[in-house]
Length: 171
Image (cartoon, rainbow, N blue to C red; front, top):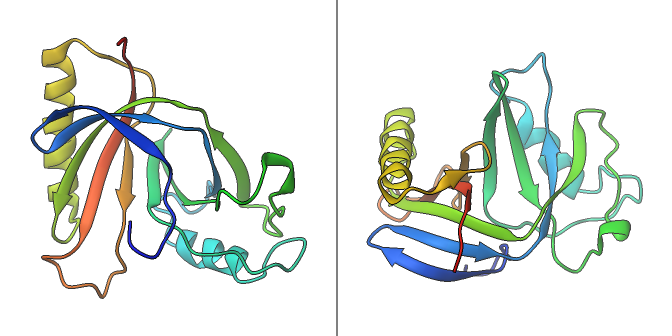
């Protein structure tokens, strides 16, 4: 995706704006703060981490997408860790609200959409993806994730976003 690294995947099946993708394992640095239920401070904490706010004071390259997840009433926000870091080489965060997580390889159902990712647009696309999964008989194995590829100041018609969920899929 452009100049920024993103997780590696293979499209297994296409259904218009919905794809079944097989992702390779990748790592995230995730912001989770029970006192910040909407993750308002998430981006600034994550940006500080990649701007030398980690144990090694190492600058880390920006990646895409930024990933939001709703779990137990709390919204988390994550950056993808560049693939140059092996699991044991990832600089540890200085913040107690940041942690390193691994997304294990597997299959995801993903819906793509363009424009400003408003709450309504996110909810409408999530419902469309849920209906697709139900109609196809796939089993959901995770929470739903919102993936954002563009900065807020990007022109709306250029913005790319996705909603994704891990599924049980057999070839």
